[in-house]
Image 1 (cartoon, rainbow, N blue to C red):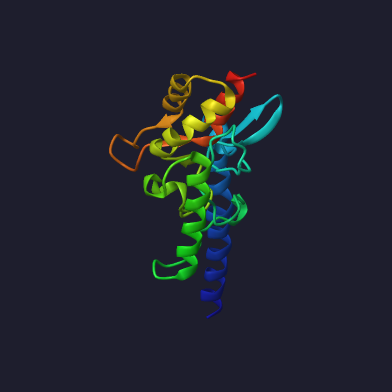
Image 2 (tube, rainbow, N blue to C red; image 1 turned 90 degrees about the horizontal axis):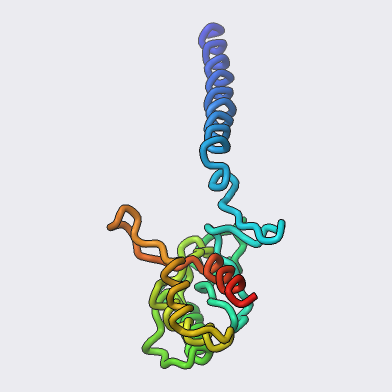
Length: 189
């Protein structure tokens, strides 16, 4: 029994060191060397200040000069990602969607029937950095007007910040809201 206990203890220590320390450190080191931007969270800096991440949605406080992210169940807190866990038969979800649709429709000057789903629903993580191209096209009219830009120029910026489907067939195209808004800031400096 003593031999078995010693072998088990050695195995626990060995595999803890290998799988819990050596492997994660090696992978982190490889990532830092081969793709440091991604390894550090795809952070975006402007004027020597970190303004966000390409991977995490942000709240633009309803500022009409900016494209708005989709709603967040976590108030855009990346350290507490998650979804609202409300089911389709719950009145709380119906109320939440009705309220979000009313705000969106009024801000964009459209009818509730024309609202794309991602404009009023949260993502699974609660911090999705992208909106649908349809959502961006609706918001483009407002943003162009508020910034004094031509609608064509805003449409071009949307196209520049739209990512296609992964491998050409997985997922849906999406517009990165933060990078688009930063490009708009550069455009109207």
